[in-house]
Length: 175
Length: 273
Image (cartoon, rainbow over all chains, first blue to last red; front, top):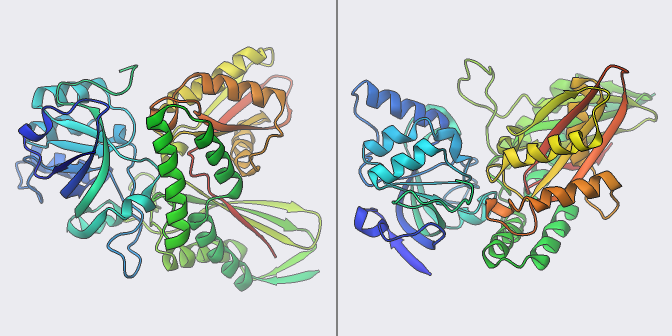
């Protein structure tokens, strides 16, 4: 199977097609509802962000507490569409890729196409299996949000399926 | 009167937190294995394999099956011959708190639905039933919110047709689409009142998945699987593993129907004290 490494610059993702499966290694960041709200608020107010968005990969995930002796707890994807309202602005600011579960709205698909981003699915409801692909996890922002804090993850061969490619094509027939 | 201490209840609930979140229900596993064997679509078969592998890893490594360890919902069936020494609700919540912490589950509960704030492990939702006998049965259903968000309630007219009701249930599943981790188990409550229909829909998820289904359940399962949403919304034969319906007498003027969907990680565990 195809393997890719972060950072995900345009060259690495532009030939990927909806439906393609691949394994990702490198650095990704978790962010879900509350973190998205804060990031978008920070951008709108012109404040500096706690992570570099250019070519970044955001994983819609809020892991369980970290069990002793493990890098991370169970850490599967959450429903991506809840982040739809925040996504176009993040893409405009350089975000390259998102990992989650489920479909995205038309506006997000348009923004992905416009900014040459990409949206991946990973195995939904498989947090224990995916934990095995996370080698390191570190809180980088919004620690007060608990499971919704932004974590920097080092992943190895993290399984992905391209759901919306950089041309805006979707894996879901009804899109 | 048989005396049961609140401490015993607390400890039992804490143990259920681990059992429910680490060990996928046997009936759910069996249904998933059957789905895996029957599936022909290669990519979907691989996803079903990942789901089965995930359950095995969770069991072996004592990791939560899903990071969304749910809004814990506790059903307490209390025999009327039992005398509880102490505070029942405080004991259940303390048990959830201790168990979720001990087993490194997720602190997903915000104390106020509007102001939100920092999340914690409790309080959970508690449904109590007073029943015959001198025992207590405690059941924990950690309900993930990806699927809980797809719940629906409709108050039909009493003259509504079965076809209209079926359509509503199938549409609720279509509306959940790929988002709520199919293959689903679809809980349906029909009758009673708006609130009780919804409790029945959730209780229906506790029923073991088996071949013994009513004609209506079988028919709905067939229609739901015809949607070809499938695992992760990528097609195949299994959009749902089962449809479970609970009914209750209702009023001459109404016909409430509630749908409560569970993701494939349908988790629950029970204990009798």
